[in-house]
Image 1: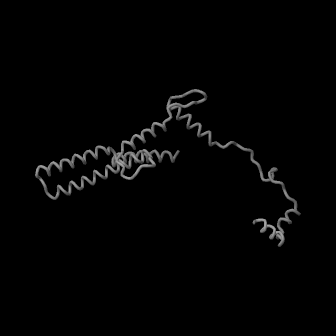
Image 2: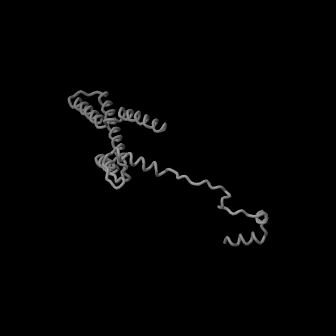
Length: 177
């Protein structure tokens, strides 16, 4: 249980970090696009200097970076194997991920001949099934001399310890071909 507690604590911290750094990607992209539009409006109204050009370049590169992050996020969520680099069809990946999530959910389970739809009971039944599945049955302790291997006598033991003859070696080598 010690490992699971650590894992849960880390998942909570990672979730907070993810929300702070990558949360609301759509809002960030929208903000960058609005800022780019404001800079473009200022330029079209005649207000132009080098800082506006540098600001627009920085905004465009940041916006592009967030589009790429969004795309990568949905590719990873969908686990699409045929996705190509820089494919802008994030709706496709979102639908793929949603379908996978829908298909991976267990809505009902047959337990002892009855259909159960209660998620808590389903979780308990699955946990108990796998807990019982990997339990080792108690087996009788068998020793080495409990009839599994026949004991050899002294003559057979000395015969096994003898060096092989030249004929036995030749026969073994020629049998390999």
